[in-house]
Image 1 (spheres, helix red, strand yellow):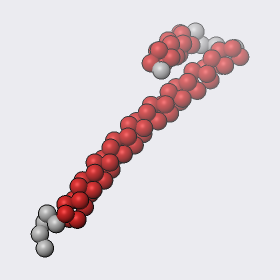
Image 2: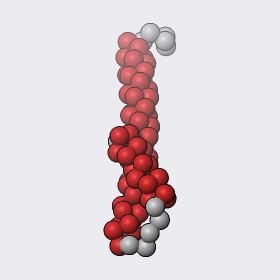
Image 3: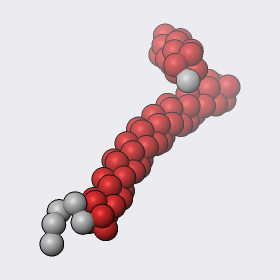
Image 4: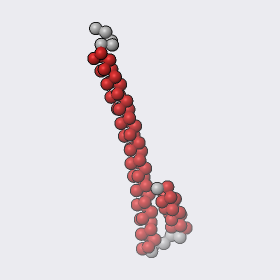
Length: 80
């Protein structure tokens, strides 16, 4: 994704150097804007994926701790 963003930035720079009202330039401007938005969405999705994985790991750790305590309670480790 980084390569695409770098190329997109280069295209945006070229468009700024040679402003034009020609349809092809407008098309390239729209495409670079769309790519910028898609890159932002992709970054957001990656961040969300990381957060979900982190929370899932925390929940698994909690569940394992609860199972260990449950086993100790059933075995009477904490006394009566």
